[in-house]
Amino acid sequence: MTTEGFTTCLWFDGEAEAAADYYVSVFKAGRILRTARYTEAGPGRPGSVMTVEFEINGQRFVGLNGGPEFHFSEAISFQIHCADEAEADYYYDALTGDGGEESACGWVKDRFGVSWQVVPPGAIDLVSDPDPARAARAMAAMMRMKKLDVAAMRRAADAGR
Picture 1: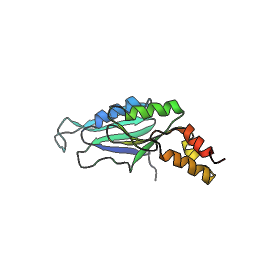
Picture 2: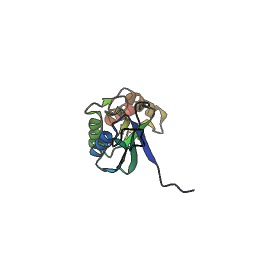
Picture 3: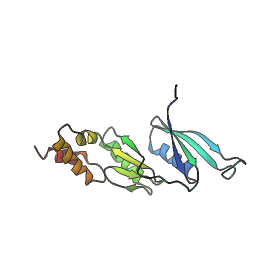
Picture 4: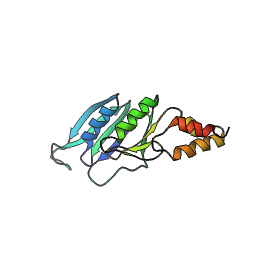
């Protein structure tokens, strides 16, 4: 059996087009692929946006205007593995701006309620260090942070030496 890959479907209550436009503006490698509209067959208002297919950083998504029945939660999030601190700052600020909110440990929720993990370089290495004591110190430092500060995590990890 062969598959052509995966597409993540995000369920919105009337905001799929605005969300897709927002995401392709935040992520430099983003583009809208296709928009489909409801017809007389329903269930949405004829002519209103049903789905918006878009791509960010090579990952395909479809935003579905499905109605108010379902909501996003932190149980699903998207990790953004950043090349450097400047990129991490950019994504953190862009996703928390304009109605988004900070959470803990580098997690943010954008203005549409979608959760993201902004991961600066080195953060994963510190909390998964082969030395369990060093990893624990880095993890303890991270647990006190909203936006990840890798230098502070590194200082905490190295404090036991």
